[in-house]
Image (cartoon, rainbow, N blue to C red; front, top):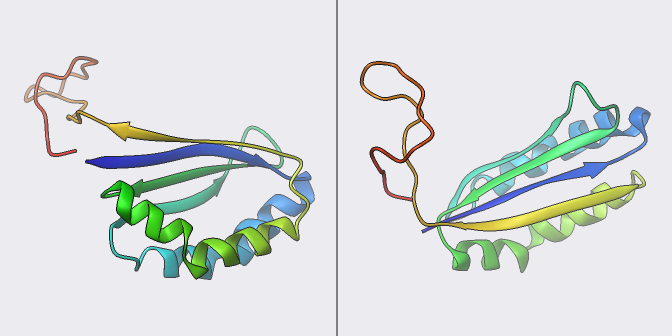
Length: 117
């Protein structure tokens, strides 16, 4: 199973870049946790102050371990020091995954082939 976390966190524009830079080491450390496939916060080049959150976890247990662990607590503390204006983050349990492009290089919206989610 795959668990995805996707969302946005809005800061004052001058603070967003500082927040992401300050969190870089914690992002790298979080990626070492068991079950963490991807963990990144990135600036939106079109919306000043907006940071996108993307996480990919192997299981609910891996995410639960992360949420109970020190990296999550440290990230909350660090980011709250930059004055979060708004945030919306959701988790998704994925039942299917597949490539975008088929064997001819054509992009497809349907799930013509699946991979382990």
